[in-house]
Length: 325
Image 1 (cartoon, rainbow, N blue to C red):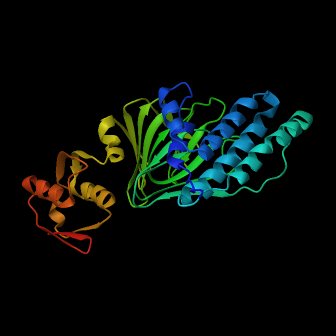
Image 2 (tube, rainbow, N blue to C red):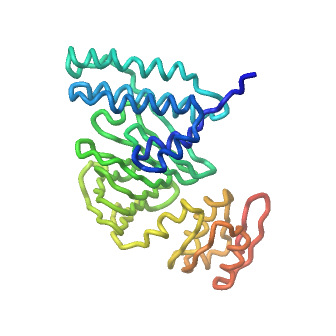
Image 3 (cartoon, one colour):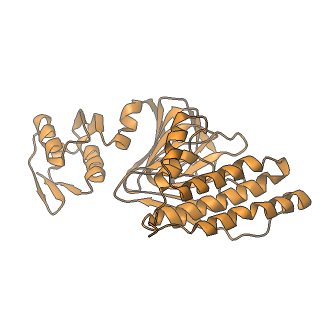
């Protein structure tokens, strides 16, 4: 009896984002089943066999189609196999596209543009974009881009928080739109926190450089590594300050670190981490500052009990609602 094998989308994502010369690539590849190896080889062939300058547009188009098919039909439904024949049929059409490209130059048939939406409501998840840039989404976050991504520009929309590791491409800027302010880069590593309920959009640069653009698409500031820009939605003012890189990306490991942050801000972070609602009835403590670090294995009660040492308050938890007295 033939045993059905399921596609390992997480491993495929890691392979697509890694260098073939990296020892980790070989280890990950060896763990794949035969069908997944064929998928990786197909994508590799598209990358390697289409280096003719006049065929670049065709290469990007076919690669985008395969990625969208994988991550729309595959990753969202890990319980079933994506029909390999569909992917190979799409990939096989690269020969036709290359022929058109060589004969007619860069002309391509009209194609309907649609949206691709990734949502991460209750967990942290990683996404490999069609250009091999990697995005890690925090809980309660949504990333959206259109199917013409990587044609002329690389644009995504973010609601929530994400860590970006952007593939360098001097010809095509990478732009993160938050609705209030845009972050423009060519290739770098940075974090953006843009939750709708928060009063600020915070961009923190780990490496490379980024520009912040206002709603008129005008550059308003440029960051260098270890700088953070806080954009106030009400005043439209930007404050640039140094930051601790570890505390900025603690959410990726599950740790929580605070340095002179308000009790209210800490409660917002705890709500996201533990998927609960925190109601502060004792308003006198909302703006009190707190500094500390909590590890990923600490429970909500353990964290609140520790905070009680420095900020006197009482609390009760009922039906996933925490009330602070």
